Length: 151
Image 1 (tube, one colour):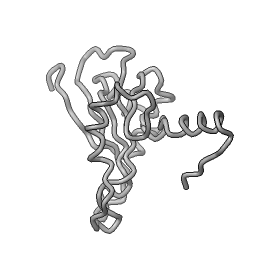
Image 2 (cartoon, helix red, strand yellow):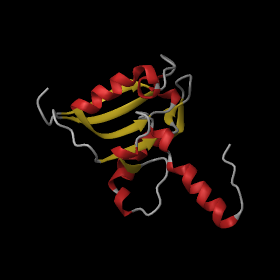
Image 3 (cartoon, one colour):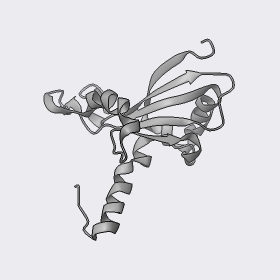
Image 4 (cartoon, helix red, strand yellow):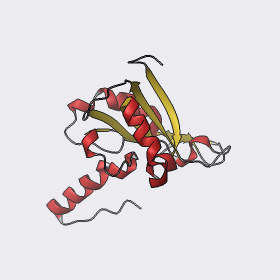
């Protein structure tokens, strides 16, 4: 792969969060700059496999910058249920349009936000780990004193 080539990979959840697989994350980060990540719903590859996966976009480089901005997203639905039956909810399709307008938004949610590479903790590259919905709910609670349960 030549310098500057752009790629996308589908990687299992464990590779991006398991400390014993940290060397994989370190290798990716030493040979590429991550452009963005999408945390895919559990049902994405069902009924064929139950593996929780992520879509990671990156740009190949032999000298990645030490710190840069990347896009993260956490889709909750994928257009079908665990048996493969079509449902009306598909957040994955909403992400490209959300990304186009991301810089115009003052409050971000699970569909997309930007963060700095330096904000990644312990080599954990899981978007749900940094999901801004939790921060938004905490701010609402601080302002109103009312806790909105989203169970």
